[in-house]
Length: 325
Image (tube, rainbow, N blue to C red):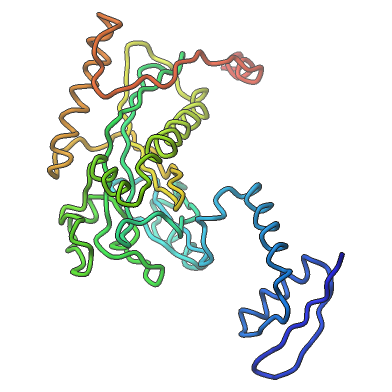
């Protein structure tokens, strides 16, 4: 069944019929509404809009968090600790950034990602999650997940009206140089960090504590395994080696984790009371995995949990590449 939509433009005071196709109606209505028009008898459109959004979610899983401001985050690939990262919502701004550094232009190292505009906030403040994991072999791919992690906050309240780093970047090396906003909630400390136990306590006040174990942790584990699987064929496997990584995640409003990046040399400096405890523990537990467990397979591995171990499949194209070397 097709419906005709009648639109009344408030500024001109006249009605105009539109075409009856669903897609054309949606586009036209969106355009008119953004200009201050009203749709008469629009209740039946709600079901169509909901159905369309569900179809869009299938092809775009990030639909809920992308927002409507078209903000992108631009990262220089040759730098670390948040240096040189900018946010922009115009193509000309992005091109100005990536073409402004001759060295980076020559090396062609830039990462441009769609910014997650609708994250889960704590007291109206943005944060990310630093999650350690350990790789002890690439074939079989062996991944250890650290059960303790910590949150890093920005110093300003979250807003999309500003592209400033104090709002959007949670890197401790950036935020430690800034003074927290006076209006920021007092439960967020001046050093901008929470332990995972503090976060669980906060979730408990929202009746969402169970989602840490049912949504957040399983999602982070899946993301890390998938990321390492994509790189497995590109890494030369060397026995008797290991690597401690630091992954950064953001959570959406349903607490689903989204992997931002993986750091190959994460800091283990005791920069705050939270990291003073955790960094010492993760280093000790790393030695338990790579040394103690080598002698005794049942040795205590601390907070590290083995989440994946599987031999790499030998695909035809991989064998061809190996033959050509």
